[in-house]
Length: 552
Image (cartoon, rainbow, N blue to C red):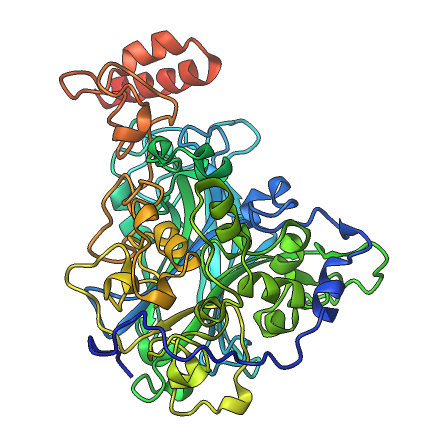
């Protein structure tokens, strides 16, 4: 099942268009309510790129990653992030996971657009003293069990199989806290290690904060830099954090029939379920989000409803039209191929026309069945699309029949492709078959890859020269770790902080809180306290001083 260098990808073969059986608008009409899209019972949300997300960032999926673990190639690592643009100095409450939501990572092993394995994390809040304290921590925190960590979150992790059976993998275990800063948490890596837990039957999981691994210049949405590509190259996400949920499991746990040799390809996406939140037509009185994945709670009251969803990166941002973005976030992948307005925009995308109007680069001819393969079916010779190579469609699984296969927007990974010793940021476009769109590694430059794909690189097998530089951001601001969970430790410096050494602000040295340090490398705590002059900083300084005296 592993592609070889001789199966040169991308390759343009016959341009046979696969008929999309059953394409219609009913699923989208039900989910969006074209007569008036409104949030139901409570504030509904979806991705940040969708209009309703702004009111609920804790439910906002930012990115999903799936890759064969580089240091444990018999396992697969899945990473999903939530809460975009976490400014490190976000006290006093910082960034907890929602305690009234379900955070899910879902795996489709047989290609029917439905999850065969679902991992679900649910969180609970705990305060040691919420009557006489306002601080997240009342002193230095060296361990998760320290009494100085005033606010903690525990979670329960469950695994649900295709038949509905559920197993509790972990119960009431502690997540890593937000990184308050060097004074409060001088060794966050230690806290992360304590929050990285083994799973029964093999594998491990982590829930906590991390530096945002995604990298791009978001000014691309300013009419593609207004026609001046020289203005690109600023990593907009540098210095910000996210809340990360990661899980590493043996390949057999994810493969169809537990056989990763016969059935190595999986589809991955993450969702957030909110209790009582429905994206639906205001006239819909049924209480369920049609096309979503609602379920009842234990009391049989209002159910949990899907309000956010993410598989392939940037699909909802740059492929789905504004009118359908919220509905897409409530839709299950099994229904994707039936949604004519969205499928039409895959076959005739907006971005190439925009590039043509601004830069004069001709848009590739339509219909774009190469994009149908990349986003909806996965790439294989059996899919009937123009990319004649076998890479990452579930149709490559020996126990999948074409009759049961359903086009669905999923991040697809061929687990048989081994990790690359020297990964190329352009992934498959650079003949590195272990990279995007075969899964997604933390360092894959998905903005540049997708820009090239939208401009036809998957058809011609060649990079579009005029856009070869992409957005000018080729890597994140921090290196990734060599071991699970791989994501970089969270930033501690303020994103807007600047001094003579770092005129661009805290992003350049946000890792570990180095920006605020003096020339000699010592943190100027007294000077910072005097400068701040506020109640919070003065109170924290007083507590620190009292503890030092007591220790002396």
